[in-house]
Image 1 (cartoon, protein in one colour):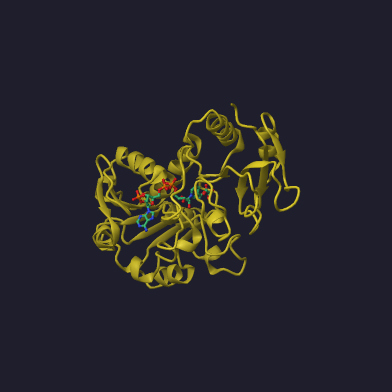
Image 2 (tube, helix red, strand yellow; image 1 turned 90 degrees about the vertical axis):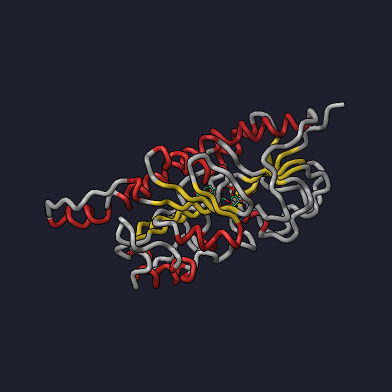
Length: 315
Ligand code: NDP
Ligand code: OXD
C-alpha cells in the first residue's frame, strides 16, 4: 500500500524561503509552521537553522532534509527526533565549491594580492613565477567536496595532501587520517584548504597551534589558509595572530565564528585576508529541490534514503 504523502514543513532561517516553497509545492503540500507542536500531518521537514524544539514532537515525521551539505545547523538542537537526516550531495553544489577552492588557491599561487596592491599605484612589476607542482595543497576533509576539489587541483599540477577521519584513498594525492596523521599532513602542506564539517571533534580545530605546523619555507613565501567549511572550525583571533606574526602569509575566509562577520572584525580590513560572505557554494533550490522530491517519492516506494547523516559522527 502506498504511503500517505503528508505535508512538508519548510523552515529556513537566513535563506529566502520563497523559491524553495514554490518548487516543493509542485509535488507536495508545503507549510511554514506546523498546526501545533504535535501536528500529525507533517511527514518531512526541509530546514536550515530551524528553531529549537520545532521538530521534536511531530509524531509522523519520517525524515529531515538539510538544504545544505553541512548539518551542524540541525544538530545544534539537542531535541532533534530520531529520524533519518538527509544532507545535500549535488553536482551543482560540488562544482561551485570546486570553483571557489581553485579560485582561491590560484589567486594565492599567482599572487593576486600583490597585483591588487600594485594596480592603484600603477606599478608595472612582475614577481618571479612559481610552478604549481612546487606547491602542496592540503585538503582537510576528503568528503564529496574535498575530493572533488582535490581532483581539480591535481589536474592543474598541484601536489595534493588530504586528511580525513578514516583512511581514504584519492588517486594522485597523499592521504593522512586521524589524530596521528594530522601533524604529518600539516607539515607537508603549503596551502591549507578546510572543508571539514563542524562537529564536536572538529570545533576550533584551526587554531594557532595547528597553523604553526604548516610549511612556511616554501615556494609561496609562507603558509596560506583557505576555510570554506564552517566558521566555528576556526578561531578568528588565532588567524589574526598568525597573519600578524608571519605564521600565515595570507588567508581566504568564506566562513567565520560569527556570521554575518561583525563590522567591527579586523578581518574585514586586514590586508592579507580575502573575505567572502559564506558564499563558496550556495544552495540553489532549482537544483536541490528536484533531488529532495525524488528522494521523498523513492522513499515512499520503499527505497532507502541517500546521503544520510551519521548521527554519532555528527556529519
Ligand atoms: P562530507 O561529509 O562528504 O565529508 C566530510 C569529510 O570530513 C570526510 O572526509 C570526513 O572524514 C572528514 N572529517 C569529519 N570529521 C573529521 C575529523 N574529526 N577528523 C578528520 N576528518 C574528519 O562533507 P562535504 O564534503 O559534503 O562537506 C564538507 C563541509 O563543507 C560541510 O559539512 C559544510 O560545513 C561545508 N560547506 C560549506 C559551504 C560554503 O558555502 N562555505 C557549502 C557547502 C558545504 P571521513 O572521510 O573519514 O568520513
Ligand atoms: C552548506 C552551506 O552546508 O551552504 O551547504 O554552508
